[in-house]
Image 1 (cartoon, helix red, strand yellow):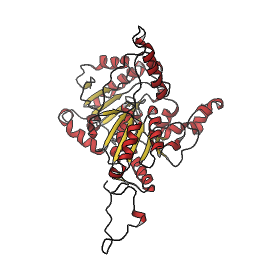
Image 2 (image 1 turned 180 degrees about the vertical axis):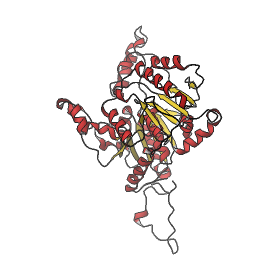
Image 3 (image 1 turned 120 degrees about the horizontal axis):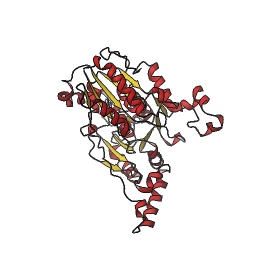
Length: 426
């Protein structure tokens, strides 16, 4: 959204600008035109940052920084530590064991493929550096205006909160996902409603009184908390239109209806194994007659044994295609061209994306979910955006609902809060 241009005042143009319209920094410095995103290497977390930047119209002027932990050897056992302490211990160990036969305990960082977020024009991902981000925000404020800082993930909390502490007059800091404590360290906190499940009557009944003080959050959301239903993401209407064009030649000719099956992986609040894979296989066979074609994809969290069971059963089936994990990733094309979805219950991100399309979404595995993830599924069912996948469905029978639109709703709230500071988002 471009800033509204106010008409010039009448007269000789020498009038003093009324204080209500005067902005700090001059030259339109109170217009936020750029965003710094801080991720943790998780596609789900970084997509939330990128999704909010897109919803705010800042997708063409973003810089993505990434917080990375030391990896390899003993480091795989230190991920429970705060990231600053983890890095400090890693450096001590590397110095102590340098040039010794014990160096293997800390060496061997595992390589990973960097996602450049091509859908928003990113060309590089930088190592997170608080000093650099703060310096740029201060030094360029007069010319470029304020900086929006959006971070997501536990490891990013210390970075985003310190940036706000050091240069609060030049930045607006948003932390996505609940930081567990001291929410006043951020201008806004964006988190799913089910993160507050511990405060509900059901949540209180599930937690023994002795342990309640250790369950966070312990207070109802304050004025700087924005609640969502699911996760933010980049699959907005503009992105889906582009994906529909990009994947037209491959997906448009497929027999209809096209059923997309997205398989995630077990989590602490949704534990399952090959049992769910076998249940999925049985249900898919039961609905195949009502499908024109089926495409199955896995995530990096999908256990190999689950993927192997699915692949062994359906490999070579004339109606079913299984993505092999090689680029290009068809996920956005699937969202654009699908007639219906089946999604495993573990993934808030995949469900949020599918439910933003307005197309039928069937969920499998909710019986394995507990705690706040169970509350998330209850909300989706009550809103009529999902149905259980039982194998009795006729995929050709469509149904509709009001699509989830969390990113747009959060962006609206961000604009309102930024306006209270006298800034706008351009």
